[in-house]
Image 1 (cartoon, rainbow, N blue to C red):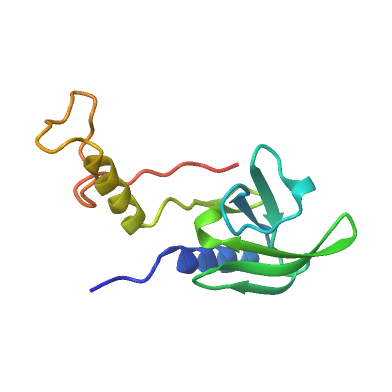
Image 2: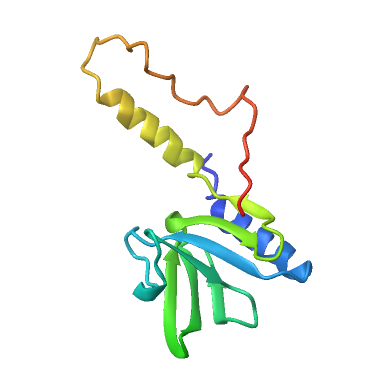
Length: 146
């Protein structure tokens, strides 16, 4: 049975937790990904940080496709759209508490399959080749986002 993507659920859960904690939710976005619509002057090193607090945006929508809202940048209105694949992290501005959103499990598996397919048939893995992730047995790893 296929599972639904995790990102929209994690995003909404962290957003609610941050807002309920009286903090300001921010998202970190890979502005170079296809479909991202953000003001170009806000992009720094290919990324943009967006304040998505209820006081800062209107018509916030977080669904399985992405995040959209109406915001003001430099006093000018702008319609923002971020596909979920471009979302890198969600965190509280005041504390830095939040999470880094890694690739969906099917993206990880698909990447491992593509990488394995790059070797010619019958070619043994080299000493530097790592086995694809199995999804179980390993320790989870987290990074602190500040």
